[in-house]
Image (cartoon, rainbow, N blue to C red; front, side):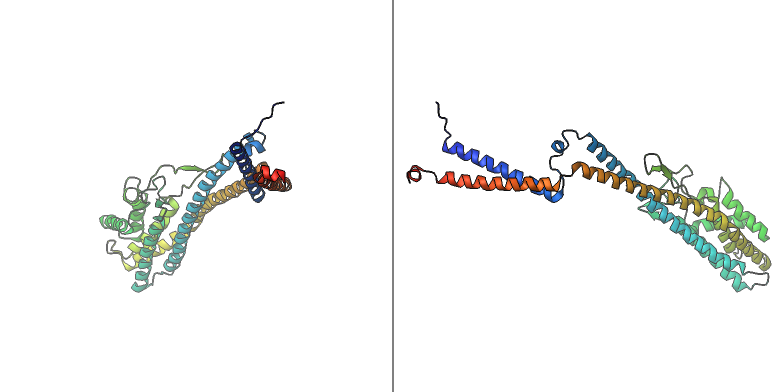
Length: 338
């Protein structure tokens, strides 16, 4: 019979390797017990990680859709805030102008004109709001601006009024309408500076794309700008209207603002419907992500009782290993003779 022996150095290396292996196993089990997840997913899933890969890919796609939808929700919310500002100004200016009568004194006409000009400036400012450097009401041209400077627009309007020399409130209203409605001049060429093409569509899930297409050149917005400008120009020297005609022009501006309420509410309502669609998509994506997260947790989860049992066994194995190693370290011929 041949006796195979192991040298002292070889025995040392074998013992060390066993020690490292047991400690690694102990650390792995400790981590699995604390996280509740398998450390070696391929082995845990029996080599079939396909379903886990599908879940992870869908979760990644949901994250991308959710980021897009959240960004759109932020943009739409800011747009709605701007429209709220315009509606608030429309209401205040309407009240101011509807108080004008045939007998209104110059001071009242002056106050109404100043309110009209202030309203014009505020509306332009609201429509030129930006978020993250992007214009909100400029259509596809997010890098530009929606409207020219309010002062520049008003001065161009005054030039048009001076050239037309209106004698009545109806004449002045016609000049203002022409400036805002002419497709080849006025507001179209120097007022609205955004893009007239279709707004870009952005995906919020696999089957839905959203377009925030409310622009500063929308007729519902132009009608309010027209009325504010008409109120301001009613006493402007460029128009040279008589006091009676100035009063009539400002009353007409008030009536126009009243008439614009319904169409402007419709504009805001359409944006609100888009906001609701985005919010619904975000909620749907969140629910799907939660469900997939639970599926993923089930796939990677380790049974805590099984892990705890294996951990205890490994701990005992390590203690035994240390005990045996210590005894082997004390072995000698002298100890044997004792």
